[in-house]
Length: 412
Image 1 (tube, rainbow, N blue to C red):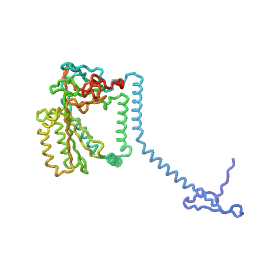
Image 2: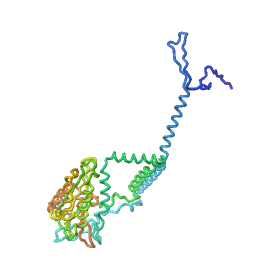
Image 3: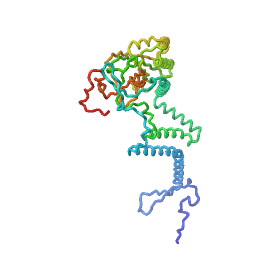
């Protein structure tokens, strides 16, 4: 074996023990005329390469520590994905293993016929009878909480909510070790994604389909005594729209708007439960939040259905509404940033109609005016695949419902 000798005069400085930073480059110039002009040959800087390598290792270590908490959340999400995929595959294979987890819905195919009055028409109800009157003790609290949450969410823009979350996450990082500070956000996202996938695959009940009625149905206003209607839109209705909005820079936190919300809630409760025991012919109400006016603090609207304009007028002069109106007259000069409005539509019989397909009862179809039927009470929802309830003109009483047959059969 042959070993090459090292000339310390020409060896790199780091082999001779010299400081790397004190090295000076060596310049050589040919004198034989063969190479001109002079070449500058700097010796390779091995120390700088070692320094860059150390910095790269430190950066890699920081990145690894950053993603160290991820395996737990990724494992949870992966297990949820596998479960959802298995559930979907089982459903496609027709095993029926997860069919029982689906929310129960009512199909119009099982609807029962209600005897017609005066031999006029026989509408088929969508839902079975109940011993107790529907809606008793079922409204109010849950709807009010959902409304409060929706109004609060609309009070700030998306960027503001993200900034609030970023500040909260920053406080956690400052107070806790990094791997524990990011764990709550990862766990929440993993839980919600996993739950959605399990519901999609059929392993969990689909909460989004709660209360949905499968099929095509229409709402018909019954008589005051709960008598089943025998003609489409045979009774008149009245629609009252109440709306309020805060135009101040603080939005819903502006002075006075909280009181506006309280009075609107008191009027809603009075309509649902009766104003001092007086029946104002109230059918139902639905709350809406305008979504196309401005980015935040949009208009809050309450649509109220009455049997007639006289019933709506009687409520306006009742104790609950008069109390709210007197408060408004007293503060309107002090709080010019608050706005309210109303619209009233008096609709005679035969001039209104509605249709719902695979929908939850909303609007007029959510009216708390049950009809009498064999075995108890039920909602005034009827099969819209039959008789003149099949088409818009039929539900207005203008045709027998066969005017759309030229387009072919319906898929319901």
